[in-house]
Amino acid sequence: MADSICRTIRDGALEGEHAPSLTIKDTTASPYGFDVFTHVLSQTASLILAGKSQSRGLVVVAYSRSPSFYLDYLKRSGVDVASSQKWIHILDCYMDPLGWKHQLAETGILPSNSSADSCLFQDVKDINKLHSLILELGSGLVGQGKVRFSVAIDSVTEMLRHVPLSKVAVLISDLRSHDQISSIFWLLHSDIHDVRVTTSLEYLSSMVASVESLNQSSDGLSGDLGNLSLLEQNFRRGKFHVRFKRRNGRVRVMNEQFHMGESGIKFTSVTVEDGLVSQGLVPKVLFNLELSEKEKLERARVVLPFEHQGNGKPIQIYDGRRSLAPESMGEVSADTSQSNTEECSNGGGEIIYFRDSDDERPDSDEDPDDDLDI
Image (cartoon, rainbow, N blue to C red; front, side):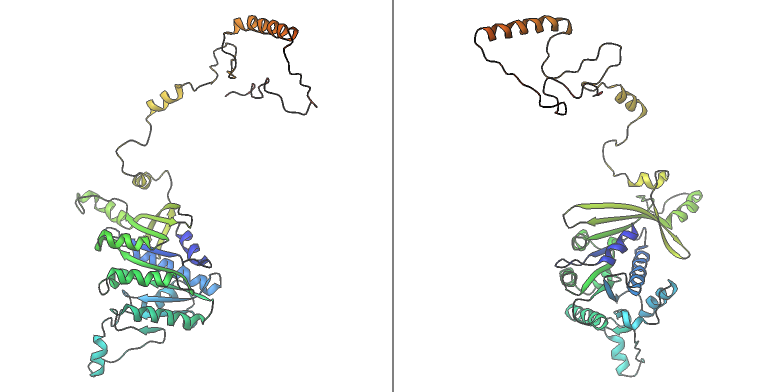
């Protein structure tokens, strides 16, 4: 399922349609949304370098980590960052988001720091300037024309600390509709915001990935000491739900399980044998979705209409014409034949039909399904 997300981002936008967008959301109960974000980021970077992606460049808007962190992470992930200036730009909204360090540097109190791989942005409240810088950095990577680039925002939660939701929504919508944007994805800490914020960002997304814990108990951390080991193990595991919104309006939901290891996040498919995960995937409803053994036996005993009984009696299939008992069918046939003969002798009409060939389908007097057990 995580691979399906990366493939969608790899394929990019179709001509005349908005770019695919991904919301990655987590909570304090399972704070691994950033690991999912960096996984998608590294996969996107690898596909861009391999020339397998519609995108030819990547702009990272860094709110929660420094530019050096992302370069080091990509290097550890096996991505060649030696030529990073040609395919990635990092818009640094982390080091000095409000310009305070810049003011101190002008007075000589702090030294000025700059990086060739990043662009320092010192006024995160100016959303229009942020929009222009994203497009400028992307165009600087891929040039002007129909070549596209991808955009990654590492924390919309940090963005919303300085900018209202309406402006953030306009920024994302404008980026999605831009001719040079191939895809865009961002991270959101959903439990910090109210439902209105989460719903609005999900509405702007063609994909929504949710990171959830395995055991969502209402009493939080309560539990005896004997279960601490199990709780610690389950804390590093969780459920990963992805909702895909297709262009025809249909919604497809997929589920996986993730595990945090020393090398990063790993995704595995949900199996029936994994009772803990499969039980958590069943929606909470007021009626039972499963049948007991007794109910299964009773269902098997139900005789369906027109089903053969198998009790040794002659098989009778109702064809919509016979309504009398079999023993009286002979008398009815004789009476009908005699009546037809009388009608013919009295000048009544009759229909004479000759079949053209033996390959012609049977007429209505023959039931082609007599030999079927229906």
